Length: 78
Image 1: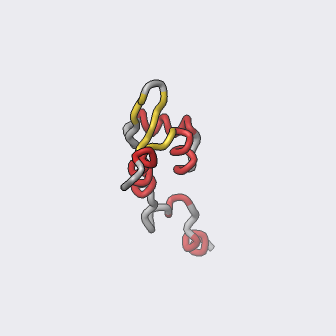
Image 2: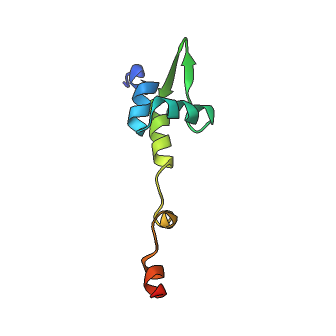
Image 3: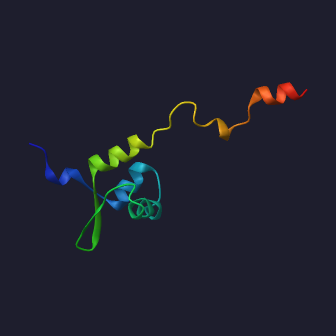
């Protein structure tokens, strides 16, 4: 049987897993990008939701060309 406490992570743990600050995580939560739950005075996230957010953030090949100069453009200019 699955331990039900293993399904929940703190905002600090979730931010660490995602690789952002807690402040950025709170912004993601506020923007609706990752679901979270207020339980008493603390905010908790479900581990599968954190994993899904990470997977949805995967960069697709060919989508970052705008971030690096095109080598053929500089060669054509000469």
